[in-house]
Length: 318
Image (tube, rainbow, N blue to C red; front, side, top):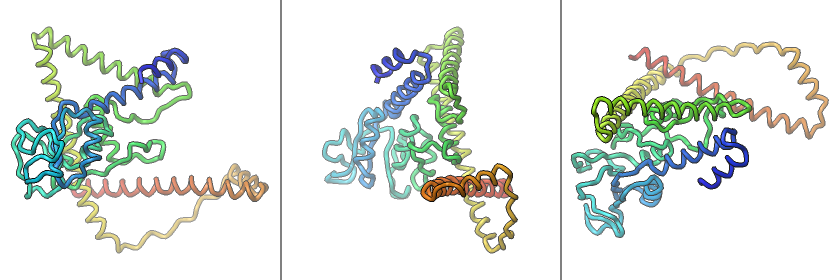
């Protein structure tokens, strides 16, 4: 919290890597608490109520209504803030085919995964990616550092792009230094973005545009950019599906014969000799560590190769 952040700054200095890291965590927590601020959300009967309700409330949702436990279709369950017929609902969480939905104009209909992905990203993601009847994008764990794992999925790149466009940062590429250079660069980048926004506000004020009107214009422009990114992602997914179908037709092709590996270098030979001199217990431990690292590298290489092949086929299909 704020007291801990202030204590860290007092102990290590406001410009230290520890204080900057604490500021980043504080900003991330604040961002997640405001993800759904101002929304009025209704949860359909078929959607798991408790986890969705918990995440929505943690994200700052104004009010939440639900149908589970209702005595009649279209009414509200016990304890619900409002029924499904309420006119000021902004989003409705559903998990059924679009043909069975009675849609209301001005209301967004999304699948449950939109709630979790938006909360983990720290911003409201475009609803087009989670429309009813559409296969939702891959769900990524917020507890995994993809850059540290050696492979950044395409969905992580898309989420980071959407987060940066929404002005909430995202996960930049790892360029950390021993003295905390990455954290300092992120803070400077945030300050620069704030300065640019301030300059835009001043320019709008000089033109006679009210601050509230300027904010509305910025919000609409940002929504347009987010929707454009989402539409491009949807097009890429469709091309990828076509490439996957085409890839299935080539499964009968004979694999290329394995190529002989390169000869070990002097350093590798020296390492093997040192390994042979180790006690058996240490040798087994080292073998397990090497096997884990090798398996991780091979898995990363397979994922990269598979992704490159799909992207190449998608380009040919386009």
